[in-house]
Amino acid sequence: MSSALKYTPDGTIITGWDFSTGAVKCVAFELNGRVVAEARLPTDLWRGDERNGELVDAGIHELNLMQLEGQARASVRKIAAQLRDLGRLDDWRAGGVSATHHTAGRIDRDFTQVRRAICWNDQTLARYHAPALERLGGQEKVKKLIGGPWAIRYSLSHLVKDEQELPWDDWQRTHLILPHGPLAIGYLTGKFDAISVSAAASTGMMDLRKRQWAWGMLNALENAKLRSLVKKQLPEIIQDQYAAIGPLAPHVATEAGLGKQSPLVFPNLDDQLAGLAGGGAVEAGQMAVILGNSVVVNSSAAELPRTDDLDIMALNWPGNLVMRCYTNGAGFFNQVIGTQPTWKACDWAEREKLAAAAAPDPDRIMVLPFPLQEPSLGIGEQQRGVRWFPSEPDPKQEPGLRYRAAAEALAYLIRLGVEAHEAAGQKINRISVSGGLAQSDLMCKILATVLERPLERLESVEGPALGAAAAALAGYETSLRRKRRSKEEFTVADAVAQIVRYRKPVAPHDPWRETYQRGLALFKQRVEQARQSGSTTRK
Image (cartoon, rainbow, N blue to C red):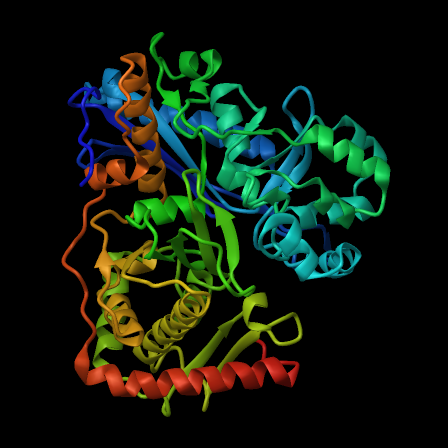
């Protein structure tokens, strides 16, 4: 039974920031999860230098940290203005931050950029990761050091790339190496010298069991001087998730027109953990599927998994996050159906209607969803691509068929992720779904049928922002209890029970079960053929 709020005033507003590599959102929630205000800002990524109108290295995905500072401050101004117009500005008491896992950059002593943040989906890292993993002695040695594997996208790979690409002067003038979330919190509060457990775990340099830096992982770097510098440049890991980093910085609060009692900001959650909390999956055996720019299949776990083919990160609270993160998600979906920036809700509805009218038939149409590499399935640079079976339907003549095939491909991918969790020893007792594509009734119906399980569908589409707000609510209520010397806990699970709301569950559609069982077997076969072939037909 969850603990109820005792000291948080009625009418309190909690914000959740969602700093992603696609956009930034700041969403203001009431205590029942209702959205009262929101600010949305674009994110522009640097894709590398151009030569003759072409990218020199198309795999680069980097985020300018000065843009991040501007997003943090602008989001405060915009949300404060909306709350002021509603007469609710004084109700804003706390905020939490979700930010992309594995994305990290470098700042100097003036908190300005030394190197952009290399993003989670940067495609250049594989070439640096492989020899560094060999220097460490392989994944078995890594597992002894940190309790789990070191995946290519973890930010230790950034340091290995820096060893070859970053000038020595930039290594020396680096004051801190920080992931996306701690950087965002730094620009909000002025405090940069701390990192949450979940953010530290996503670097690949934290021991998941001790929740401390595992300095042995720095042997991925050849140069001992660089290893010594990194030890000085990584911040302290925060062990108390309920302790606020601080209020908004005075200059941030002043330019937004806030008074002296500006909101408290609590330790960040990586976006996967935020999605887990926002999906209500904060206890062992609960799974959250996030249908966003990446498709994420993650769950809470009391124990470390038995297998090595899942990402493992630590929760900010006791336990672990076990994850299969697919690089391909909404980007693939939008590519296949030809999404246009000018599309409105009616355009999406029309294509969904056409897709719903198309009967499921994996022999008639199937697509492999790999425009980007998918390392967890063995789809590398030579294998990636979008491949249609038996042939690609015409975009103008059969848009509904393309829509349905794309939704089915993502559902099959997610089923592989669920099976990987179960093979690792997870006993999944509930699955929730959130993210932009979860707004599609057809997508959820297909997914429930492919998974052969009912899905809990969130009322809010703001999974990561809602999860960040839930963590902040837990911190805020706990801080009030501590002031009153109350020993009664108020956990993130209690906050989730307070603020997360669900729609009617989505049940599997029985007439499709057999068809999708056959489709899943065929999808697995074709993924294996693509993995073995060495190449796919690129689109």
